[in-house]
Image (cartoon, rainbow, N blue to C red):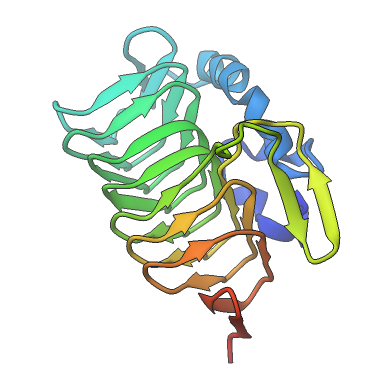
Length: 219
């Protein structure tokens, strides 16, 4: 339930081809920057404006003057990058997204229609189609002991080989306000997370996380 095909409809991302070559979605994290540059150079000039080094922004996107964007980065059609947003390298942001007030992105893929609108930190993570992170919710992407992040699902454990790995959010995931997604968290399609939760491990598709001892199927 944590393979790429289990989590994402790849037709809803400009990075679909990149992810399609990865059995596990986190395998794409090391490739985002290079993919940005290669894809950016091929984007049509009538649709995308190149601003600065390796930054391509759709001409119908709205970027507030106070936002900061460092390349490589691609911002999709009709997306809003709002006041004091901070995008620091290796970011693919899809169409119709919201990157909001004081939100920080780093080494990420945001599918189309993703919303990270208020005080979010999203690092070394992939957010699926129409996923939403409530105000103040963040991805924690480094373990305190700096060892490799391991994806754990019951007795199964996969060493990702990465020291930096935030969270993989499947399509249509809803994360409540002020929640923390710990390193290696994987949320299946249609998962909902209660506000102020501290989440780790794999949450199956179609479930609701109320707390670590109360994960229930959606009815």
